[in-house]
Length: 292
Image (cartoon, rainbow, N blue to C red; front, side, top):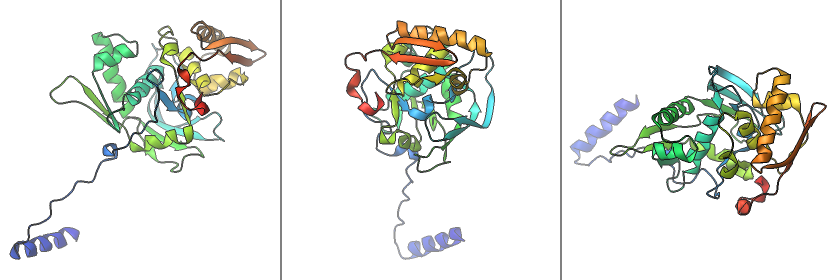
């Protein structure tokens, strides 16, 4: 019906010699001219708290096949029974780092980030090889093919389905890649509910130390680490190994965090994990104190 009315109006305008108004395209979500990510220092990419307090980016053997999830419920620690429903291929710590660093590069291009792929790989510690380049392309494709529904009390539009990456493309006439983000991502950073993870810690972690990487994000999201049950930590990070093996891996992961200077001490005793944060390095307090 609307098409018929539009045609009649257009015919009348032609008879009266009136030039039709050019149609104005509706801006896409990623074309909004405001930054999605809050101000942050160059050495500290940020990520919403909920993303590092659950098994969205889970701990798994890098050699194992990735699972497929459909509306898989991920409970979020300290979110008043809040949870995320995730659909897509299994995400791991490398996926988190690509997502975080792409968001970190938003800067001068609100809602998107443009970068040279090999330089990007080098910045996150993958090197500049062809294998690293392929891994980045695979990761961006995986992040694009995701659906997250947030059911967390602080989120106003609960249940809205978003993708971690709205789309990505090769920039015409150059070797750069441009990544676009869904505008809904901005709400996850409201009220200072985000975590900064200092590159100087993550860059020092040995390759393949996915549990140490997850623990770094988890403990970074707390002002001070709280005593935590071992079995609860295993559930939150998504590790599926036997409990005895997980305890062994956790002991090694926490030792790494002490070695890189993030933790000062830790102890695993009677099924309880206790840690103490080291003093933050100079210049790391440029983010709001609420996320320190």
